[in-house]
Amino acid sequence: MAKRVLVVEDSEVIQRLIEVCLRPAGFEIEMRSDGHSGIAAARELRPDLIILDVGLPGIDGWEVLSRLRSDEDTAELTVLILTAHAQDETKARANADGADAFLSKPFRPHDLRVVAQQLIEPSQAEPATFAS
Image (cartoon, rainbow, N blue to C red; front, side, top):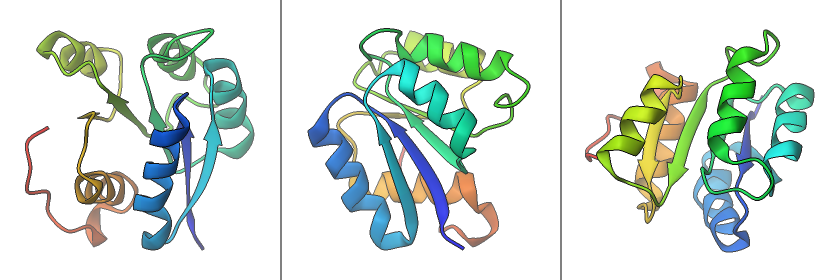
């Protein structure tokens, strides 16, 4: 059974890049372009992984993460923060707010695939060879 990834990202270019990276690895990809629809999709789909941008229209990714973590139905979902804001403070906030992983944009497609595989199926993933 294919593992489901929910991508909450407002850039269609980044959405497409993520899809091109992950679909060949056997992931089923669902896209949402704003925080509200991302939360609704997380509740409905119960994905194996959520790839969450911070800079979203409506409510930002931080608020999405907060709402996911505070809802018992979504609190345990795996969340990867993917953002262009790569400062140490942003990484620290992602960790403190309960994200499972952090990757900065621009990213290498291979790195995204490896991180996604490690988060979804740690025993079957190849080791990461990057520092992001």
